[in-house]
Amino acid sequence: MAAGMAAGMAAGTAAGTAGVAVVGAGPVGLTLAGRLAQLGVPVTVLEAAARPHGEGSKALCMQRETLEVWARLGIGEQVAARGVHWTLGRTYYRDRELFRTPLPTTGNDHFPPFVNVSQSEVETLLLARVERLGVTVHWGRPVTGLAQDARGVRLDTAAGPVSARYAVGADGIRSTVRELLGVGFPGKSFADRFLIADVRAELPFPRERRFFFDPPFNPGRTVLVHPQPDSVWRIDWQVPAEVDAAAERASGALDRRIRAVVGDRDYELVWLTGYRFAQRLADRFRVGRVFLAGDAAHAMSPFGARGLNSGVADAENLAWKLARVAAGTAPDRLLDTYEVERRAAAVENLAVTAATMRFMVPPSPPRRRMRNAVLRGSVRVPALRRRVNSGRLAEPFTYAASPIVEPGLGQVAPDTPLPGGGRLRDRLGQGFVALLVSPDGTGPPGVLAVPAASAVGRRYAPGGVPAGGRLWLVRPDGHLAARRDPAPGADLGALLAQLVTAASGGPA
Image 1 (tube, rainbow, N blue to C red):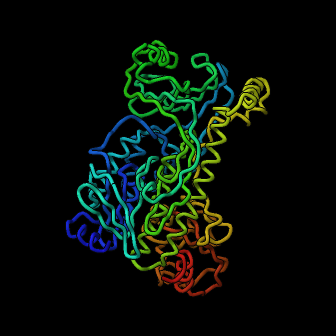
Image 2: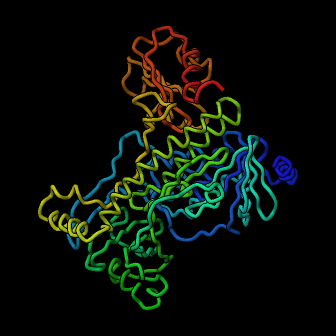
Image 3: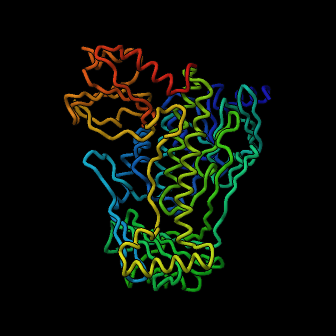
């Protein structure tokens, strides 16, 4: 294999001997490629499609932590400015509103909890950004073979082999990389289909998501309505398995469905498709020098917005680890923690979305009767409404069981303001960050943050550690890794070096 790898590099198609080949130019693959490039890792992207598709909304609900990752990459503000900041979810049974779900915010939040914008628009921004970072995306380059040894990975394509030190399959639910690795993808698909349309219309609730159980215009099933930019609405109808999108459009049934939502207003059909959703989890996320991310590693229903958002978290988690190992500052075993952390996140997301799908699509007649009884009863008994499941919205995962996170930590660091301006999350993304909370100020004035290099202690605490001060170590992906209550006058440089080494999997 070494000769083939050398030939690929000589032909100029490889990521390089210390680089990464990313398979798939969707939002997960492009996010990973961009973050690797920012961290100094040579990277190339291989995409089977001949060009960007740019079709419809697909994923559209972008969570705050995803926007933070894209802010580190340089497009977060654009995505947030373009998207709809929706603030309220309403859930209905037939023609009765059951409850409202306001999205939580705090005074320190830089981004809203969720922003609705088409995946296609985000992919356009990501593609332009990674190209500015020097990443080459090879379109029309499906991978047909894969081999690896102790030195690297070779990916076979029709245009010749591509060689890299590592490879990542971010090539979707039908991942070729996963198949070539022989990794199982157990799970199930749901029999019911979902008819999905993007419709442009002026509706009187532009910042609300509306979810309907058993509405008169789709009896026995569900309808979900989500706002998008430019007065476009994403409408999801749960429909029987035999319903065909093209046939619905030709027969006029689609117009009747849309009219039931938008009324007699003028509307424009922007996009239409049909989906059958699956819940699946790859047996492994790492095989040697090859990794799986996004839908290639886990597929879940979209109710709760956990698919794309969890895939971007995969990319951010893997990027800093690959960068440190490639640079020789962390051991190879750090890469094992990608699977430990992100597979656990996928297990939780799948459990949450599976519970939603069991309520939305009961798997048996007894469960359907029970679900219907809960819905009927919730109209009269408010206490029953907590059992109505219209999708638990995505939240960042806490790496509580990770071997490189101290007990009780692993959660995302808060977005706190810093002395002199800026915020903590502005400092994240390039390396570890040390956060010293001083006891003489419980608010922002008592918070200091600097890059966690070997001598930074003297830079932000010239007089030593203040009595009662607490030191936190924040990982490049924004998760809390360690905390200490050092004695006054402690050598912070030495302490930070120890903490960073432990949070990187040990000595390189």
